[in-house]
Length: 72
Image (cartoon, helix red, strand yellow):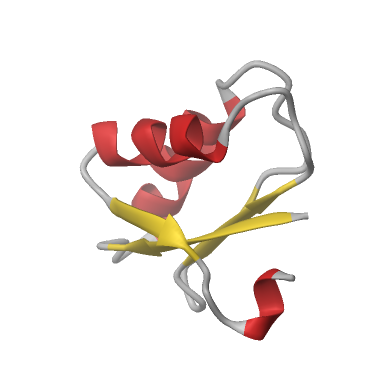
């Protein structure tokens, strides 16, 4: 499972936008977005994490890799 922190989400419309942006990437599976945790998780896919970050940032949110122990 991959995880990114997402800053700037404030409501369920934000969650929907991030979910749709990541789900639109080739091979995306199991995309889940948590407003409460401010993160997006997904199963491995054939796209770099940089492309996921780019897709999220293109819709106006900040995204970065989770550097805590939960990302391992």
